[in-house]
Length: 520
Image (cartoon, rainbow, N blue to C red; front, top):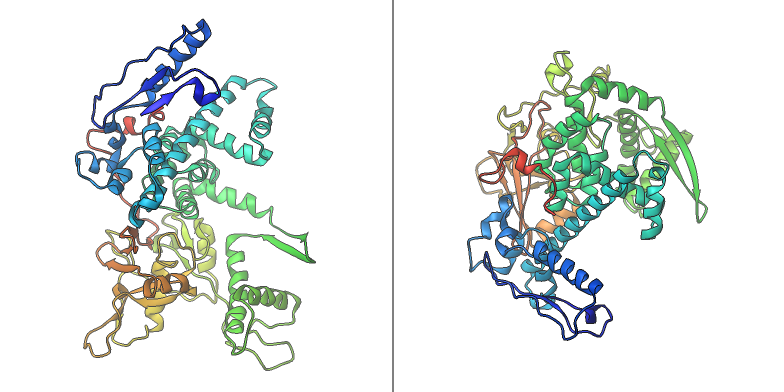
């Protein structure tokens, strides 16, 4: 039941507009109920407009299930509340359904679906906001007012100019990229992901649309950093020459800055080429990690990194971690290194596929070639499955992986394998998916049974009730939460030339239908 009346807005009249619906398609609606006194012409016009708005927004329930994979619960009258919410498209109908729920009465699984449904409703509302702002921007285009539209938004919403400018970015971008507008309006992405799709990189509009179409099918399950990385990889692949020019231009803007802050502290910020930044961090890690593991050490790892940076830059520490003039310290004798994955065809100059720099993501082919050409570089051949682009396997009968196997798993996983986790694989534990059985006479320490887990998610698997499986055929790791929700972490593609297959739309849909304007 949806009701509106003057009483709801501080007036004294009873509600004059009432709309009801049942759960099925084509449900009958209650007629307009006239109020006791005859309304004034202004009141009558207002009531007619409100009635029209209610008629437009209260679509039959079947429309909640009209998009893509959310169609699965539409024909199951006895489906659980959690399945109903998972299937529902965002809009006034879903919002009213959620408002009527009492969280204290719901089980854990359903509460997670309530949360997800509210987030889709929020995205739908943000799409409506973006559409209104896009209209305002269009009306002021070419006038002196256009420049200051953002200030009007900031003043009205009580936000900074920078925050208002982000709204303007999304409004302007969704007007030019209807695929993004549709994904936002249907709750498949939120505003931060929409802004990422619109603003990441510097591709011209026509090529950006191609990059967005390439990554959009994955956007719902990706975090913002992962989505940004996918876009950068697509950008380099679509426009390798432009990516190289932009890298050289950006390189000339490198800097180091000091920003004083409270409590006699400061930020030291460096804007560096990605390969140089990776080398610096590797040098810091080579000193900081052994420092942190020293018996009796009480400093956090981040504090050890900060102290290592200061010591290396000022010359108080050597690259091996020892104090100058002292023989103490974790002298490894190894030069700090970085990991870059690059196709053999790119190394040979046959193409310009992006390289993958560990801890950063995609880099132009020239940067990858420069790292590989380092005279002290160690090359390791990595074989990938031609169908999936996933690293192939090595195995061992011992509990601890060999250095070659460990390096291969780190190169394959790149990060912790919990969905969305960005902890680099070289900083993680290599965990056996199936616990190692010393009495079993068969290889158990192999790529299919090993994955990288940061300490937090290793504990989640061991103590937190999470269950993990791995599909060797696809390279996908599946995490099952204590609530029963399943979350897939697709493999990191080691082959830069491999592209994941495009997802198909709902049955009967067309590309034009899927990329049209938001369904307002």
